[in-house]
Length: 259
Picture 1 (cartoon, helix red, strand yellow):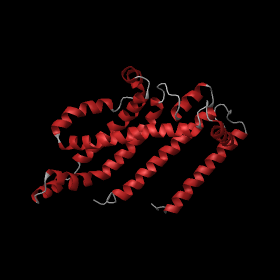
Picture 2 (picture 1 turned 180 degrees about the horizontal axis):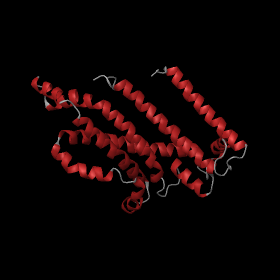
Picture 3 (picture 1 turned 120 degrees about the horizontal axis):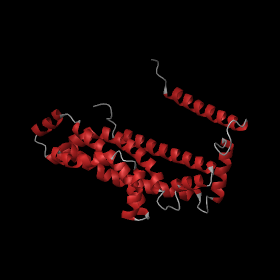
Picture 4 (picture 1 turned 180 degrees about the vertical axis):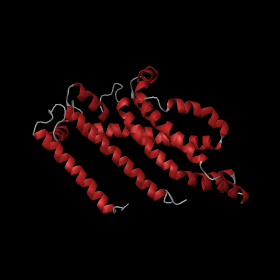
């Protein structure tokens, strides 16, 4: 199968996006779809300009973006700091894995929106509840991925390091962590994507700002233009977060795919 160059790939992707937007605009212009169901791209541009100028319900658009991004980044950072070491320890300790894995596997597939009533009772309607929902959605997948990455390390590498007299701490930082990092970085990318989707559930909890709040509130007033603008912003921010993680992996884990 013929491979595409990077320029060809980007050109085809850009062309597909342009064709999609043109078809969308044409369908709206010809009234194939009512604006209340799907506003045209030009209408969305007007909505963005209005949101930049007046905000939504007296909350500036940039505040909604910063609030949502800040909530998510704090939860992501704590989930990574806690989840990666815990997953590595579970991968190296069968006893710890036997103790914690049932709880992880039980909590991981539960839709986080189902936790909202309990979280409100436990943590109230402040920032703690929003943080917890994003955190729990992110950390479970990180633990599973870090555990698998630790278990997939070649025992030959560890035995070779032990035969050279390396201490357990040196084996951890010189053998286990470098070998597991490529898989861990991939896990973090996937987990942050999952955590980002939990933002909507988190901002359903008595929020007064944030993109999730803006989308849910606008939906209640049939402001589909605001809803779609919010969804597009969520997609763009999610894309940028993933792009930054890819660049970080290329810089800090350059041996990915080479071991």
